[in-house]
Amino acid sequence: MVGSWTDADVERVRGRLEELVAGLPGVVTEDAHGHIGLLVRGKRLAWVFIDHHGDGRLALCVKAPPGELETLVAADLLRYFRPAYVRGWVGVELHAVEPDWAEIGALLEQAWRMRAGKHATAAYDARRPG
Image (tube, rainbow, N blue to C red; front, side, top):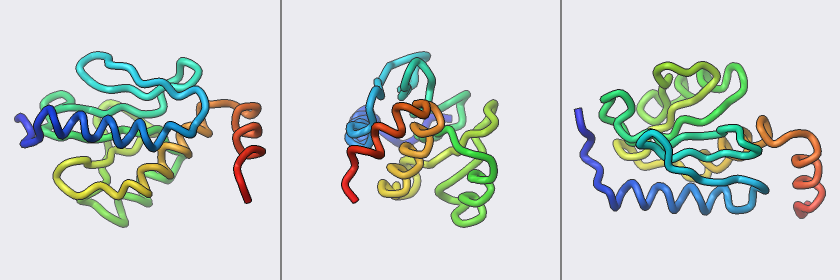
């Protein structure tokens, strides 16, 4: 099943995600296996899945702590889902419903904190206002 998004939709999502992670030190974007990956220190913190295994979705798959998936799915089953083939990750629909970019930004920062390491997160926190 192929989704109803276009290449322009994929590029719009990519651009928005790159804006959200621009302030997170060390995050790089890569194209891999037909998808878009976000990494820090060589560790993946998120994927943009484009029709992953024929699921028909344009979706973000982001690393998350235990319990996060269940909490988000219980709050909004249309927006959040359990991604196939991965554990400890949250699926976020990016096309069928309007993305909540503020929430996505928070999820990306949380994933970055899980992957970046103690020194990087301490330095990041030290330079943030307030």
